[in-house]
Amino acid sequence: MLSVEIKENEKVVGNLTAAEKLFKTGSRGFFGMGKIQIGEKRYQVQVQLVEIGSKPKPEEKALNP
Image (cartoon, rainbow, N blue to C red; front, side, top):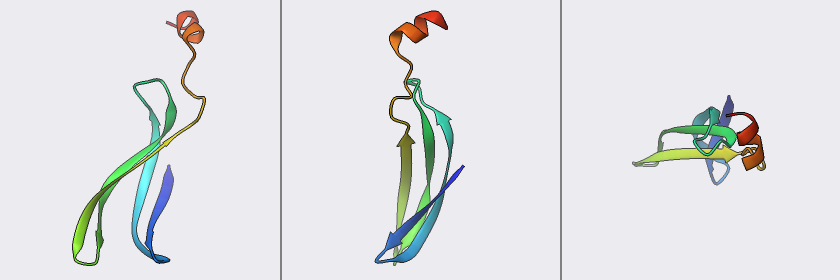
């Protein structure tokens, strides 16, 4: 699990956690979503981190159906 800080001008305005995820494409990474408030306004936030090169190659899929 990752912790993500949302900052506005060096002031932390929100925190978000991102859990490990196996995406539908086969890639691995982290994903999190939530709601934060900045001033008087509320925002819906998403964060996605995808490990570069983590998607299985077609020949690997054939070997591991």
